[in-house]
Image 1: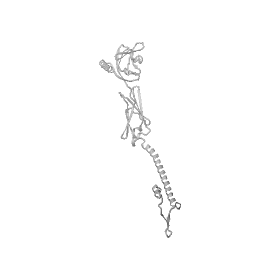
Image 2: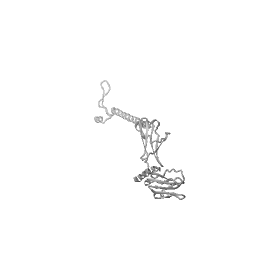
Image 3: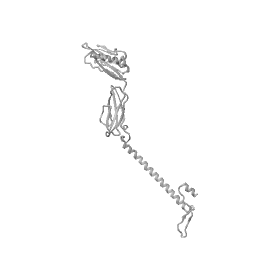
Image 4: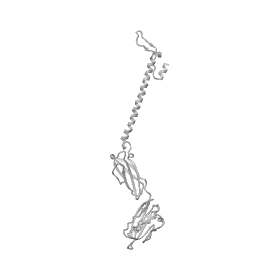
Length: 282
């Protein structure tokens, strides 16, 4: 491939000295590629070569003839001289020359150096916060400059740059962004929700999410307090009931009275709701 490109540059340099047209062109593997020929005169004869080997030929009223790798993948337009290669392959890279003769029997040469490139990778959208703005960048692995288009689900603006800056106040939690990349006939896209671009308290819809998260948590906490309070109150009542029952004569409490019929004094310790107290009683 390197040798063919070097040959192309030498041919281009020679073409420049001879005032012959020379142009670099690019195609994508798997695409159909047409050389950008612009001829105003009526054409009488056409010969296309690749690295000096003939690949297509047409003369007068005859049908075009194709050679080598273009036998089943080439199409020659007799009116304007354009040559189309279907389903580009890596080995289609090379220097192509169009030699044609017009109705005045004048001969012209156009030279094209074709480079066949791998398709661009799927775009990746990266974002970050810069002050009061949200910065979006669309990234794709490709050797040449891509055409970018940004579309948003709610924002009306359409952008055609690799990087987009949006005010945070113009973005809500439901906003989505899509980046489209295009080169020649190949187009790919990627989409994200802008909530992914925020974190912590700066997150889009953070306050809404916090509110809807705290409400259930508060309800659960209050229910827990009520349940614990109920269980504690219930246990307290049982404890008091046990103490009253233990002090009654039925349980054999010994009570003494003073000579004047005063209040009795309990001789034994009343039980408590603990195991230690019960053991002491026994």
